[in-house]
Length: 386
Image (cartoon, rainbow, N blue to C red; front, side, top):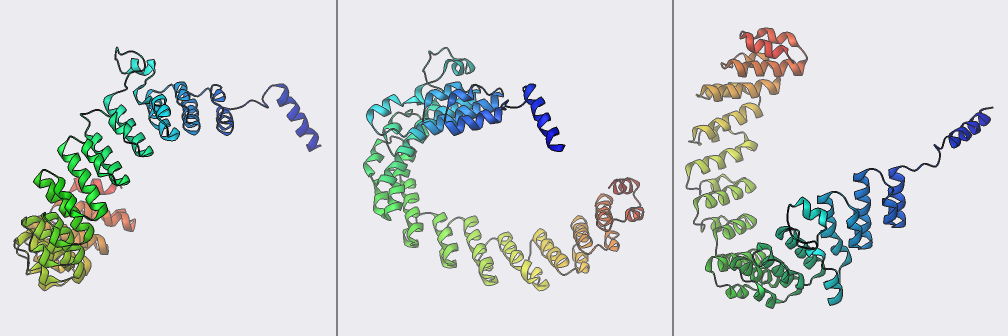
């Protein structure tokens, strides 16, 4: 009986035309499977239809399919990415496939320009299109087509020069910084610092030498503080940190080595008192040694040190050592939250912070009656809102 009912239902549904109707998703899948953009035309939802054209244009390497896309930004993306798929290999294909200069009339309208059809999109979009194509095909002819004012044009040549090991491509660059970077990339790839001497600007020469120094792990080639800092840290060589002229970079170098080696004596090499104290405090986060806190002279850092130990060892008595009321309250609050002890909240003087402390414990213990311990009515009200 059930089988006959099922067959009857199928027959009725078929008569009403419900069976066999395809959804937008069905048409999308068919279009992708058959690589047939005409099927995309049958999709009603604009977003799905645009996606259908977009993926088929990329899959088939056919720019004209992009024309079916309605959404402006999606269409521009299609123009940019299709040449990456097509990868022209001959001069003829390159000239015919040079779609970075072309634009559909409706996009021109969106851009509010009076330019004729098949004009540039924008300088930025056009240059981005050419750069992407150049790097995909390893062909500098596309770098040539980029705007002379584009900062990316030099980078385009520089990357290709390094990839192809052709230093003459650097000669196409007119701007100092991209030209210097071009020589630097080749110097790094060849581990040859003498190439840096081709640069005509001293600061860039120093950067180039330092880049090669880091590649070769050879501090004798360093010409910048950052080079000495990076090699000092990677080699755990405090003597290299000592050669750094910048006080902040020198302190950072010593601190990184001291913390990685858990060596307090390296902190002592730091000239600046605040940086030295921070070095002590960071190392003491693991040691939790109270005597070390007393070596710290900077008030704020010493407070952090006491708080680290109070929270790390659940020893709230250390909070009482802190002179500053607000910092002491902060210490109490953190310790109270860790061990869920309401008595510690009562030591906090600031009403708002005390309320936060009690509320946190009330939430964790699911005991809203704890809020009644607050004297401040506003804090009590906020506490009970949880």
